[in-house]
Amino acid sequence: MRPSVMWKELPPEKRLVAAGAFWADEHGVEQHVEVIVMIARKMNFRPKSVPRLPVERRAKLLAGMPDVSDAVASRALIAYHLTAERPMMAVFLDALGIEHDDGLINTPETEEGSEAQALPPPDKAKIVQGIAALRAAYPEDAVLLYLHTLVVLDGDTWSGLEGLIDPVT
Image (cartoon, rainbow, N blue to C red; front, side, top):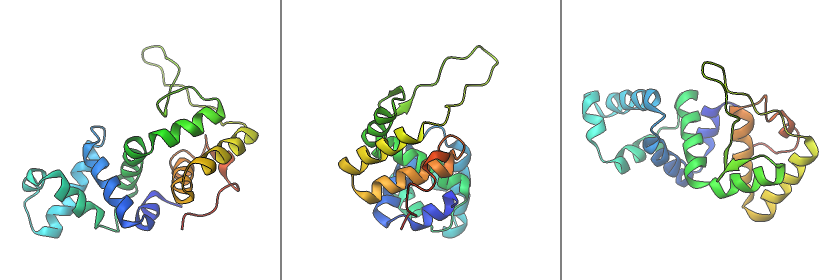
């Protein structure tokens, strides 16, 4: 599944929260520009007028767009989870024994000029424990969205989730 498909299938209320988180995400400048151009075309505005709209209005406009690029959908899904689902992310990472800071994975320090080390794929048994911990504490739709987001955005690290989760519905 692609991030844009996940975006399209999100319930409207979650899409609105994700859109609000998207606009607050300071790391999504390129995707912000893409959405600004889309909104400007849709509303027949000049692109420089769109950022002047209140954030709530921009979020509502983005949430109403079922078709966005994979880059925009990815950024929105990341922002959504970091904003609205950090406690859930922490529960999962705790169950897997992965060091984190409030749901954000701690990456080992690297020497200047070298690439950050990738997280090795977690053990399948720990993944099963993590899924059980999530299902015991959170609604199934939130759990499935989180797990599918992990697979879609980092399939190499989270390949162990394949076959353990149902499709997002």
